[in-house]
Length: 321
Image (cartoon, rainbow, N blue to C red; front, side):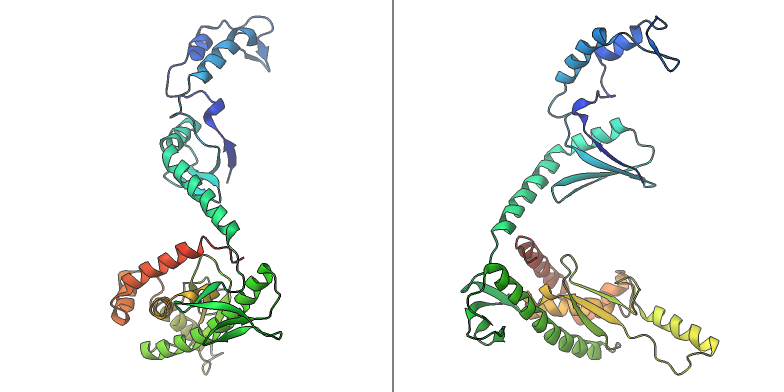
């Protein structure tokens, strides 16, 4: 896969006629000093440079594009991404640079808005800090951060308590440790309760620091998250039974991983994520059958999903590390 950094500010558009192109077509060839590696050159530098500069100056604002990284692959369409303040274009192998530039130029306004939004979000994240008295969210409710003598940090009915005299980064780290403990406790119990209700295998529960994924599931280590299903379990059991090596063994126990950030959501939203992951034990994809399983348990799952998205957008502006 090739990667290319480019911009059209120094490229002549293939789509419009150019005085330089006319000059090139009319330039004499074969003169002394106009050959390089056996190929004729077109005119002298002195003759075509003014025309080149004049043409570059005529490039309009609509034709100018942002710098971008180009990745080519065996895809059929051009795709554009703006991530972390950088523009990336993915294009088919045979797409010409001029066509790619025109595509990017047509998205100038969209790119500018995305980059502006990213800049504003970066500033918000830089300003995010926690201190004594700050409010932190647990299961949809806001609790204060309070100082408590001693070296322990934890949660009680009044709020999150942490040792006194901590710096803001230390306070943030203490909150993360509390969140992880609370997430492990609550999400394990809630997942097992709903697994029994849905009549699926009780999974192992792992708490991770994932920032972009609320949950994932797998049948055993090494299986890509989100690819577990009863079909895979049945195939594993059938294969080993035929070989006569594991007739009395249980199928691999499924594993569900949750981001500790999920514990900030309210209970209904948490249930949506839990049911979503448990449904993958019955259907490995996001087909109609999968969503029917989720809908049978949670008829209002779409509304809960919207609230989860709102939480994600809020946390995206907070730097939790």
